[in-house]
Image (cartoon, rainbow, N blue to C red; front, top):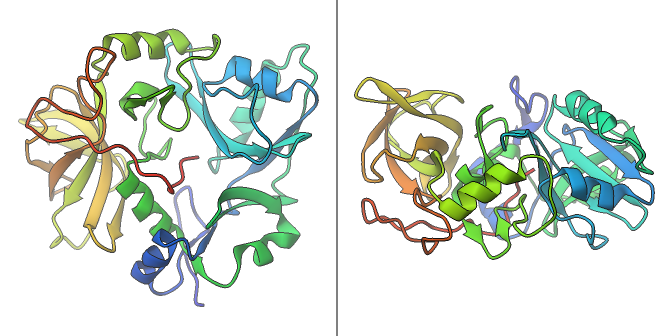
Length: 322
């Protein structure tokens, strides 16, 4: 396999594709390939208080996390805005965790300030351990075992991103900005607000905002999937503004060429923008497909949008948000 790697951006150095990205997408969608994401930093949290401590300061319910179960969680600021994201798995004695490239020092510094009397030990493990995505899901293994764990059939990040965008799963710091709250990224479903927020756990920083918007509905912005004009040679740059009648109404995050849907992207768009309004993004025509209901809340049945007549499709399983 000839690996083509990212030259810049958060995934610099990671394998973008192995020569046939559309075939790689089909393999990944069928559960027949693995993705090397070993460029993502890894750390560990050990100690008897590790789960109860993280449960008290993050958006996910972790105090009863089963061993071997992958989780995703946010750390929010007092206004409910996403400041950090991480995902990992507990092996029964140690929590193995990964976060976004370039974000580990700030995350570890924040966790250190919140440690107080908690019986936990936090250590950086990027040199010894690596993250990967296999047909069984995401995981963290010793670096010396990475090649064997990935197997022979591999897909690049292009394939993983295309399926993630199709599934409506945002990548924090790519599909979000410094004002993003979790309610803008997912419709409530049972006790969950997307893969990273539990709606019936104890207090944690930022919970008041999440609960208020969940109860009253109408988040300021909504995550939207964009179907881009396939005749355009380029894809929109991350962070490109969406402008309607001379005013900015949103931003574009990740984009990719999908093996069936063509060029697609994720965007955060103001709730007031009509769901059926055609958009132009970075000079490229785009049609909206809603992911988050602009009216969603306890007073609205999730999954149905009342403006424009378009239905909101819930995120699919099998894609990764970390």
